[in-house]
Image (cartoon, rainbow, N blue to C red; front, top):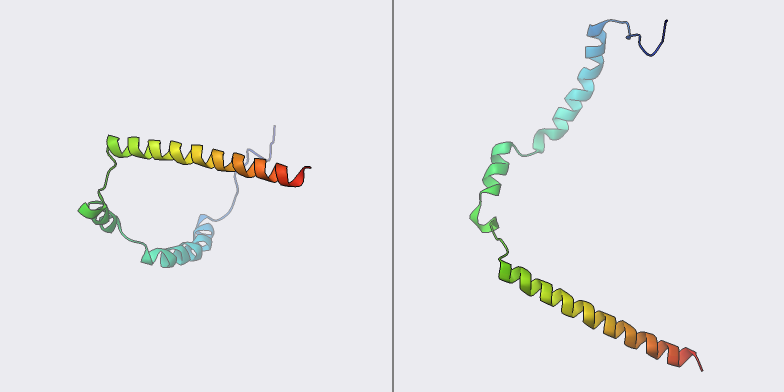
Length: 89
């Protein structure tokens, strides 16, 4: 059984390497400005970036979100009632 899917490409391996050298070189040139791992580690270990939320902060945020949600729903209900009174006789 000769299936074309199972056949490997034939050709010179050196020519395929030469064909990919230029794109790899372009990618390397574009990535020269990217920080190294050491730079990233130094940035991650900075003390001024280590700000964590406490349980109290999260609880306060949750209460605040609930208040804003309820307030927004009440305001939307008021706007809807006003619009219906205005547009409907």
